[in-house]
Amino acid sequence: MNAHANSRINVLRSAGFWLALVLALSQLANAVRVLLDPVAYSAYMGLPLNDHVDAAWVHVYALRALFLGTFAGFLLFTAQYRVLSSMALIAIAMPIGDFWLVWQANGAAATLARHALIAIVLIAAWYSLRRLADRIAATAR
Image 1 (tube, one colour):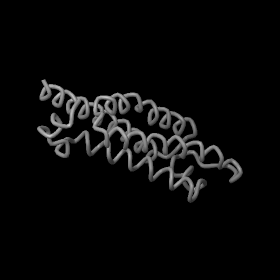
Image 2: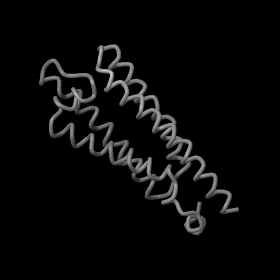
Image 3: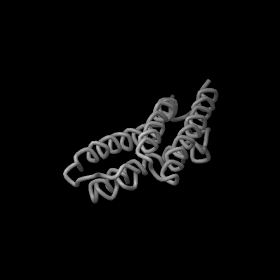
Image 4: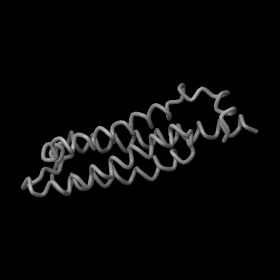
């Protein structure tokens, strides 16, 4: 994909662009939140720690979030919308897995709803980014 093709499509008017940006920034914010208070973040996720010495596991989550946010930001910055679309589709496994873990732990309904909403947002991002990539490819022809 070339920069000239992108200039004919206003990516800032794409819901997929904004959804991906919000998702990337939220992952980076989650990484920071874990570093600031891993015990509180584990409770927010619906899987509170029994002991603060177990916080290392939450730091593993922070590393995952840091990678995902940085990589998604890189894909946005380099206009790799088709790859970003695939990333959003594959990433749906994470909130589904989080939902399942919280459900198994008898977590709060609001936390379960948040994980379900994240999965729905990822589906919307996948669809919107795929359409954006298709429009850019059609314009480049």
